[in-house]
Image (cartoon, rainbow, N blue to C red; front, side, top):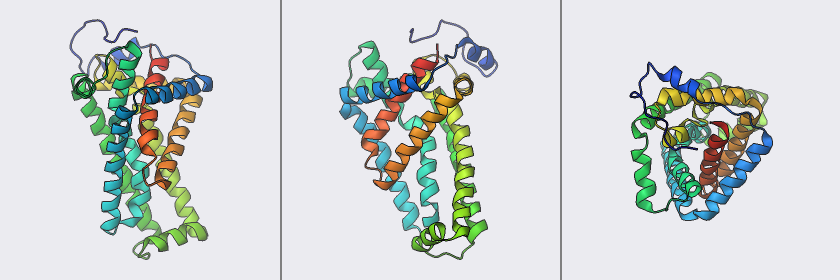
Length: 268
């Protein structure tokens, strides 16, 4: 597949819909998803130091933010923060897309060409797409605060109180179910426009609106497979949560590499 689209007029909002229509969306199944995960694991094994670098960066960043929130007394935001932080993961994994791209095309891997290529390939449009996700993340956290205050107000003073209430009372379980349901809706929305848009921006000369709409089309055309992929991501996040982000050293780059191969499967 060519790395750059045919030359044309500069990217703009006005041509976004037409550009998005250029891309053919393939139909893929669960077997294709499994194949992409296997390729993601293979890429990680071929270049583990690069993958673990990006995994460590994301893990340390997430753990630091989580510690600051708990230390500041906003313990009730710990869980939504950990889950919501995943909304920014597609952009933290940009380096892994470049690694997989270079492995696929036989190009050399060095720190300078991996890190440099991230900024030279669609950095401006990636930043716009990241801004949309950051805005959604802020809404996510606002809703989390609202739900907590709606259910508990200022009645619970510690993490132990919240944990006990959530897992031992019907009221707490209702709070957990409502919070997760609302979070799932937001996550599905963000997932739809970031599923393949970051690797598309890295790989081709398109604007961020084209990448966003193409990603939404890809998810809509493959709901069963992409929902399964979303569940895999959710399970990996759960593992990272119980390991205090240590598992992200390996899981994060594998997810990034897999995303690249899904993009290659989905977009013609």
